Amino acid sequence: MKGKFITLEGPDGSGKTTISLKIVDQLEKEGYRVLLTREPGGVEIAEQIRNVILNKENIKMDAKTEALLYAAARRQHLIEKVLPALEKGYIVICDRFVDSSLAYQGVGRNLGIDKVYQMNLFAIEDVMPDKTIFFDIDYQLGLNRIKKNHRESDRLDDASDDFHKKVYEGYLKICDQYSLSLIHI
Ligand code: TYD
Image 1 (tube, protein in one colour):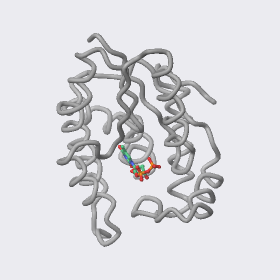
Image 2 (cartoon, rainbow, N blue to C red):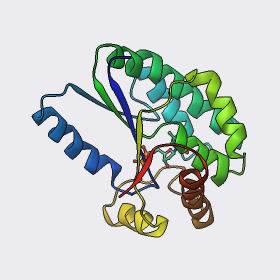
Image 3 (tube, helix red, strand yellow):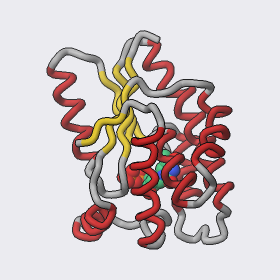
C-alpha cells in the first residue's frame, strides 16, 4: 500500500474531530495528500447503517447485532473509500476504526475483546492502521463536553455512565495488553 492509514480513538467527546481537522491542515501545509473520514459512516451505505445503529428508537438492538452492524459499516467504508485512497498514496485519517469496536462492543457491551476482534477480521481482512492515536480523556469529562456543546446525543451517548466507564477502561486495557501503536496525548 502506498499511503498511510492513521486512526483516531477515544471516548465520546474526547476531541478527536476537532484535532483531526488541525492534523489535516498541518499535513496538507506540508504537502501531503490527506483524506479525512470517519466511522461509522463515511460512504452512503455505511451512513445508512450508522443511522440504524445510532437511532434512539432502536432500544431493542442486541449487542451482537450492534457489533455486526459496525463491522458491516467498517467493511463497506474500507472497500469503497479507505483502500482506494491508500492505493493512490493518500494519508487516510479515520475518526474511529476497529479499536472502537473492541472498547465499545468488546468491553462496554461485554462481548469480549478477542471475540469482537475475530469477528472484525472477516470484515477488515488484516488491514490494520499504521498508527493509532488514542485521546486519553476521562469519560466523564467527555460526556460533560458533549452536554455543554449542546451536541445532540445519540443512542450510544445516552448509554449509562457505567457503560462509558467500561469503554474507557477497555481502551486502557487495549493500550496495555495489545501491541497496537497507541499514543497517549
Ligand atoms: P459519533 O457521533 O461519530 O461519535 P464520536 O464523535 O464520539 O466518534 O458516534 C459514533 C458512536 O459509535 C460513538 O459513541 C462510538 C460508537 N462506536 C462503537 O460503539 N463501535 C464502533 O466500532 C465504532 C466505530 C463506533
